[in-house]
Length: 87
Image (cartoon, rainbow, N blue to C red; front, side, top):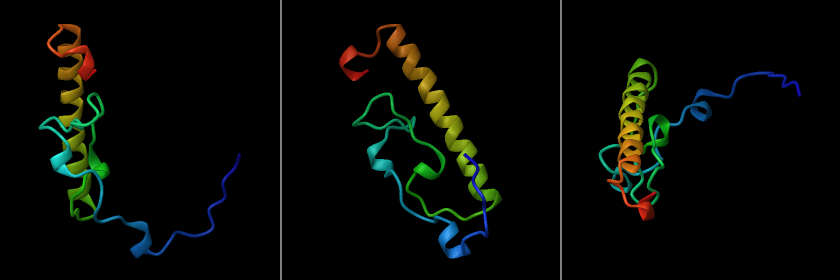
């Protein structure tokens, strides 16, 4: 199904600058404490983020943290260090 773009939205509508998952709802690996196995990164996080290179850097960095958290969580599940009820 083709999608034809006519014009971009105004900058105040096109950029999100705040809102998202609160840091208090996650552990240090950016995993949701209420939903074990669900990780957040980038613009999913509740932060006041400038646009441009700083935002991209923060998104990539939080993605790395979350990715390492996923790996640690999966290894913990496989080795039996994480209880099945937390999976």
